[in-house]
Length: 125
Image (cartoon, rainbow, N blue to C red; front, side):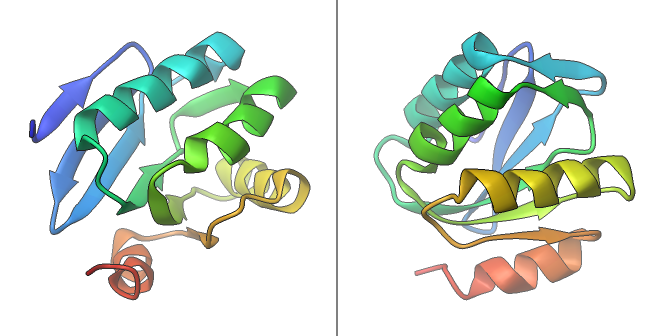
């Protein structure tokens, strides 16, 4: 299994049994981008059921169809998601996503990585 991968929207790396996904600065996420992001993530962790740390501070905008896709298909083979936000913009984006998309897995926003990793520790096996 590869430890690092990058596409036009995100970078992925494994650390401490958690997949870290960091969105590139200023990206716009539409449905095509969301499909690519999920496809790349699934190929990277090769069927393993894992916790994910997702840093969305770089996202400039994400449309409704992308949010819906990420909530459904983006949850495949994920135990839980900790979302790193930066108030006020990405924090509002994350809270809106969680409230309206109703992801089927435990999903919580954090302002720092340490608290996010403590949350994900509950989902490591």
